[in-house]
Image (cartoon, rainbow, N blue to C red; front, side, top):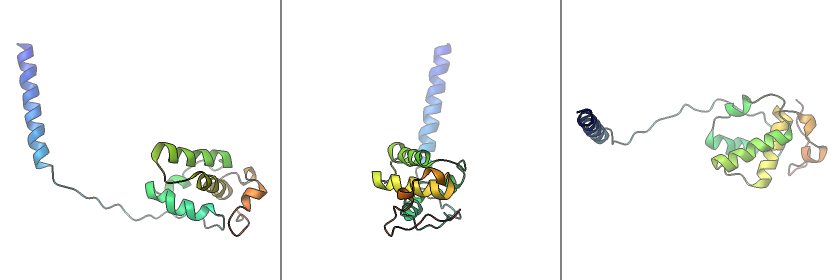
Length: 129
């Protein structure tokens, strides 16, 4: 008796799911609100990379909500995680440059070596915080 009730319940659920699936099969689109967060401008080579590639997958707010004193190694590890775990379109050099930019502008700038801070194509200095 119990098995019969379970089987009948499964049939009813499966039938309902099929009917709802057919009704709900239309393509839906959603429109996300425009990005309002902005990264702090910099002459560092990692700035345009972060601005262009980080925003492909998530709001720039995610960067702004991180702990304030992350080191270059920690920011670089975050960028590597985004590439390895989530498929962010970053190569090894871009990951390094993004780590330098984020540590310099949002994190522990003292963790960035002078040669890394001057690593932009124009050899520009890191911005004052």
